[in-house]
Image (cartoon, rainbow, N blue to C red):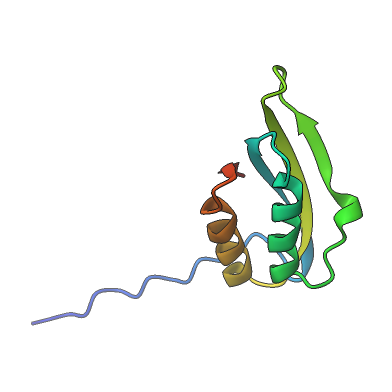
Length: 95
């Protein structure tokens, strides 16, 4: 007798949507990094406020941590934002 495999329950999200969601992006400290990250953030959150960006330089000054806070509206939005940031040539790490 062939029994269908049990259905995998859909994973519950730990995030309530919509909500403000911080994302840390790191890259080499070069001209244009913060602007590039802001442009991407605005693509996914039209009301993104660039004045909320937090910057943290690495100890040696070679890298820059950029924390953006966007209005997350769905898991799909966050996944695509992470993919877009991660594939940008100026970005080294997205957390």
